[in-house]
Image (tube, rainbow, N blue to C red; front, side, top):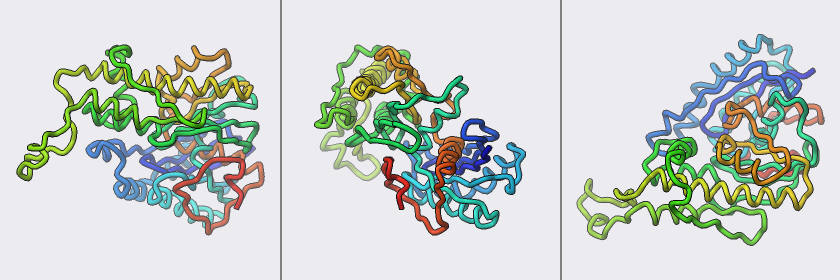
Length: 355
C-alpha cells in the first residue's frame, strides 16, 4: 500500500492531495485563482505565481490534515514538474523539494499530462482501463492524442498545431464578451442556441491525427465581430478602439453553439478514426474540456468502444491526479533528485522520465 502526497501548481490552481494505492483519494484540496484572472480574460502568469506562493503552505497542510496522515507515513512526494507556467511550476517544485528534504521522503517530478491521464484511475469504475487505450487530453494548454499500451508506455499520435481546445474556448469566449473561463460559459450559452446557425470550418491538417483551431477562432471573429474603423483606430487617447466589437445583431447563443459543435466534431472525428486505426480497447478523455457534455455525448455516439472520462471534480487541474501518477512512477522505481528544474515544455512519451 502506498500513500503519495501530490502537489500541483502548473497554472492557476494551487492543489495538494493524498492518494492511497494510486486509486483512493484520502484528501484533495484545490485553491482556485479564477476570480483573480477573470478581469484579464485569461491567466496572468505573474499574478498566478504570487498566488501560488501565498496559498501552497496552507493547501498542503489542509490536505495532510484531511487525510489524517503524518509525513512519516508517506511513501513519496509527487509534484508537477511541467509542462506549465515556469513561475507557477517553480513554486510547487521548490516547496516539494523543501518538504522532501525535511521529511527524508523520495521526490517524484511528474508530467502534468500524465497526471491528467491518471485521473481516470481515480474513478469508481469496477475495473481499471484495459490496455491498449487511446487517450484524448483536452485542456486550456493541451490537445493531445496518445496511444497508451501500458503504464508508462506512450506513443503520441497527434496534437494541436496551434491553439489548444480549451484555449480556443477562452479566446472565443472573450470575442463573445462571455466571462472567463470560456469553456463552461460557452457551453451554457450554446445550450440556448442552434448548432446549425453557422457553418464553421473543420481544419484539415497534414498529419491525420493533428488538430488546428486557430482558423475556427478566426471564422468566429469574422462572423461575430466588427473590426474598428480607421477613425476609431486613430482617435484620441481613451476613445480609440483597437479590438473587434461584438455585432449588435448577432445571436451569441447561436455563435456559441455553432462554434462548440465545430470544435467537438473535429475532436471526435479524429479520435474515433485513431481508435479504429490502432485497434484500442477503450477511449479515455481527460483534461478540463473533458467536462464538456457535448464532447462526452458525441464521443459515445461516434464509437462502439467504451468511453471513459473523469468526474467533474477531476477534469480540471488537481493534485490527486499527480499523486496517482506518482504512485505508478514510484512502483516503477522512479526517483527524482533534489536538483531537477521545471520544464515548461515537456512532451509526454515513453522516454519522458529518462534523465
